[in-house]
Image (cartoon, rainbow, N blue to C red; front, side, top):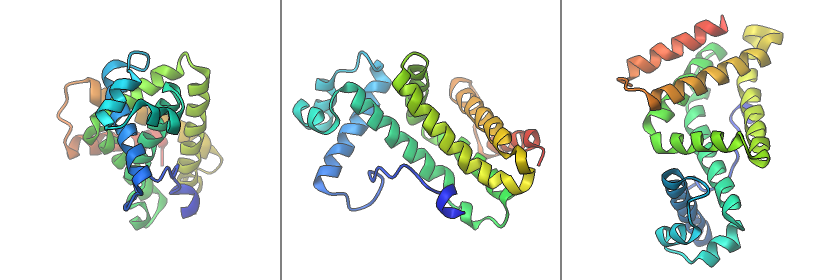
Length: 204
């Protein structure tokens, strides 16, 4: 069960002891996230990203191809950062309801504590509305998330697991966007309140 629920995209950039090449690519990706977030996909310039990362534009072209290739690498980097945060300590919970609660709490907490990464993720959502390649990538990522949540829900709701997993995903996304776009006191008590709303909607 753990092999399916806790799997990530495994880009490797969040591991310790990165090689020189991995460190350089990580710097490029993090610079890309910053400047894509600041200027948007079309307005972000590879030359500025290269300067911020301390590399040449040729390095970016060599490792990521074009701007779209770098943007997709940024998407995968952010997604893995989110996954690592969301699934931490799930194996410490004794049952799947507790795991679901922890998963929702971790996910919402990630958005609160990583607002720039969440803002970048919202930019990715926007790109999915008009870019077929991005939309296909998001569909793959959503399906992976549905599988993870569905496995935790299966013994709680049976055949309704996939439907409930989709519902939970949509609720989480809505709450994350609300948390970053509304003036709220986003303390632990408030996040726990949001978790309780999600659990109540699942009827588990």
